[in-house]
Length: 437
Image 1: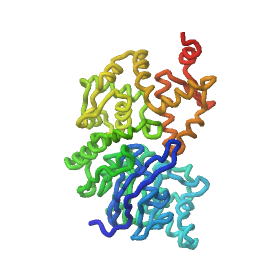
Image 2: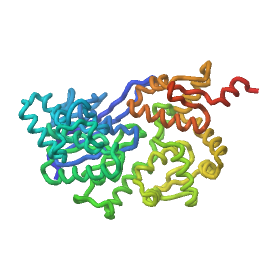
Image 3: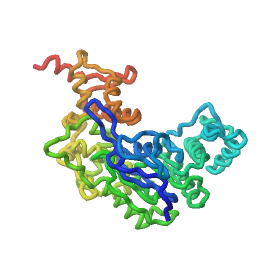
Image 4: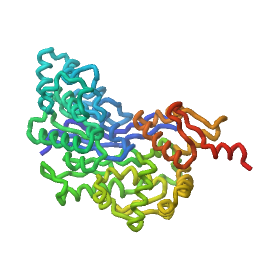
């Protein structure tokens, strides 16, 4: 049974200043984390889950509301937490031993004591014998084990994990996740609670005692919380496991966004309309598969048939919905007339159809309009990075531009040259602009 409350957020709101006003990231979040539980923060890209994690860790201050650690309101970094990052974040010039000792050194622990504690943490995560190795000598899975050891060696009250397995291959991630759960259930886990950020539904159900689903529209609100009443170790094939996955998936995909008030219509902008991670090849492949199955298919069945996680399809599904090529109804993806036409078209016709729908996507429209107004039909990528920098993290920003670049290239609206980091209006568009007759 969960114990006393360690961490709590009350009416937590976080906004960032943007060119068009404040950008809401979290809105009115209430959350408690108790001793003896693993809490998963689940949501699509842009739902604010990583921001919420950083607010709980005291790394990002709240705009309003409060975060308390053992009853005391945070005024800076949370002394009871340690973080494991997606990108390992190891210092390449330091050995495994030295990387693990960093936190203890910052606490002022004596050399002999911190060396002994680091060796025990290294052994705990299965890296005994690699103390003198450098990060470049390690595989991705081993590097992430160092990240776990570095966080656990300080014996935090709460271990914070921000998508710690997403940079690993499937087999390595599954193995590391399983070992972590064995350590948790053994009673020798150094932390009293865990908060996990993930976009993977099955990962959340496999690991967590509670799954908190955040909505991306409206921004950063808790849509629903699920108690995971499954004994450990958990089997993916159990009926209850599948039932929970389906229920969470329905919440993430089925509930429509809250409509705006009639008096204050929301204008779609690159800031409030984030692009999913969805390449044109993936979008085209998915609509063809759905068309072959009669124009509609259950997404859970489709993911099983393809040997994928449901989460692997979410970006593509979001992309098709954004472009108006498909809709999700009762957990089925259904092609729209535009989607059916796109799936049946030859290459040139599919490009034309795609250009029609993608031209209305805010970031694609911004790039296209900027190029059309440029004297020579060009603009550096840095210009768009600067415009979006207040709305997205650097990693999110690159993903936004990557998707917009792929979509705009396929639609033949513009090209992108990596050597000069420059967008250029498509040749035919330039000719049309210069000679409209």
